Amino acid sequence: MSTSSCSFEDRCVSILCCKFCKQVLSSRGMKAVLLADTEIDLFSTDIPPTNAVDFIGRCYFTEICKCKLKDIACLKCGNIVGYHVIVPCCSCLLSCNNGHFWMFHSQAVYDINRLDATG
Image 1 (cartoon, rainbow, N blue to C red):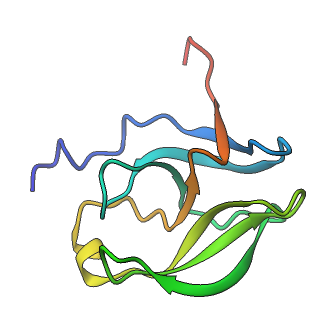
Image 2 (tube, rainbow, N blue to C red):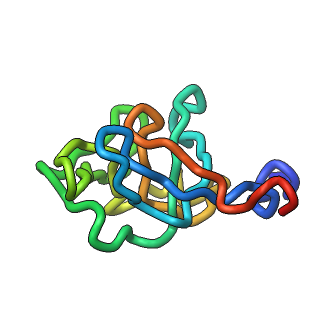
C-alpha cells in the first residue's frame, strides 16, 4: 500500500452542519469516501459529536462488508444525518482508513472550511 494514496495530512478540516436545520454537528469534519463503495461521498469525524446527534433505530450491517452500523440523527430537527461504525469489520480496519468512525451523508450535511483562503 502506497503512503501517498493513504495520506490524510493534506485534507481540509471543515465544520459540518445539518442541511435541514443548520445545526453544527462537528467542527472536525473531513471529506471521505466509503471504503466499501468508493462511489459514495461522505463526511467523517474521529470524535463523537457532543450534544448534536444521537443514535436512532437498531444496529445493522452493510451488504458490502461486515461493519456493524447505527444511524445518527440531528438532535435539533430529528433527521438522520449519518451513522456510527459501532464495530468495524476486519477488511475495513486493514484498508487505508483515518480512524474516523462517525460518518455523515453528503445529502444531509454541508461543510464550511475552517480556514480562510490564506490558510
